[in-house]
Image 1 (cartoon, rainbow, N blue to C red):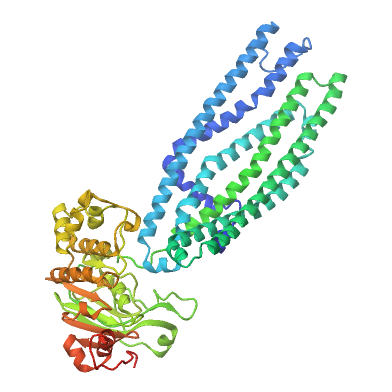
Image 2: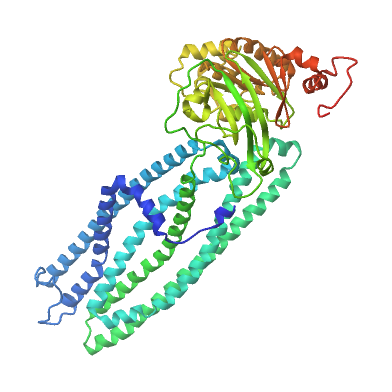
Length: 640
């Protein structure tokens, strides 16, 4: 949570310049809103001045002395003149209302547009990021970027910046009028400013610390909730509800305590400013009242000064609060831009090459590691050649520098061939699939499809050639039909139904109340694991891929479903290159070729009977899996 704790500077010109760039498409709305703010600030300071004119001209008139620039416009009759001033006052209020409405509507509208654009940009960027990026960044933190951090920027655009501009214009206007009316009375009013600034600094420091703790506590609450709501089944299974509740109470109490400190800071700061402002007004009343008695200051000036003094301190209070909004927005923008500035490491080449063919796959001396042991270098980039060139050997220094998952892996899959990859957990089976789909880039060697290095292929075209079924089926909220089609408009309804028929799931779907239009809840919670897996099979088949990849696709289904899947597989692999990863050897015995992985190496290649006759690793795996069914087979370790 360290990233969440840092609030950063209250103002960063570099970040602000970049943020203002998002306002450019809506510059005219912003210009009109700023103009409305300026005019509103001017209208808002008219009231006390009109009070001065009314008092000095009509209520305590000094004959023969001009009172204001309005003299030529106002009637000499007191009743008529006061009515005119009242009308001007009401008109100013109406104009202020109209200007307030204009700037509020335009800035809120602009803020929503900016949020829409920014969220769309972040989501698009996240979709383009390589899979390795998600290995290092928690989902909760990324969700926070799209939600809370963007909301903080919206608050800055719609409330923070607008209020700061308005408060500054009001302050400047009040100071100018007060200095012009009676500069020495203005200085008396300003005398308490050093104390107010000191109180503001103390308040700002206290609130800054509280807001940092609040943000950290919220991040912990979100992470804890996400983890424990997702794992609620395990909690209930092991009777850990009370312990989880107690730990949540501790985290929740930290959030409450941080808020209490912030409340205390506000409860002290605002009364302090009120007391100091009241002292300033009392001083104005005293010194100004004496001068009124002496006849050197008019009563209207004294009343206007007291009103201006009251209005003078309100923006100062608001500015201290807006400082916190600005600070939070700067921190949020820094985190957002850090995310947006993180480049995807796996991208399509500038000039992609088209690979024409039926699906010939070649792994040529492939070395791969997810991470580098030595700090300071990214394993995904180390040693990758942009033109697809490779080295068939790795030096001793390279071997010690990486935590290798695959070591010098070479094999060929012919077009239309069905191959299976087997081996212990951690042997590198799924890694082969990830590299084939270019979720990661290799450090040495090359992977080719139809004679072209996959790093030279367009990513979209490369992945369109594959149909993949994963071990854990994932369904999106929507309908069954949408989950099979998965946004591919070119997949017709007939193809959806034909794919469902081919994988033996059509009867089940048609038996649902709405058939293929049946709603699917989040993660397909209303469907069994087997049903979700069969829908995943239909999804892969509906897109008619050249290359079919099944990664432990039957490991989490029951025996009956596995029989249905095995029957469907026979039809699915016809006429296309197929790669099957499986622990259950019963599902891959009819494969044209079986590749046995062990500790990152290709140890054996052959069909089922050939590998059994070698009495190697595959034979040991077979014995371990069928020891209960076959008598007389010694129990041996596959690591022997």
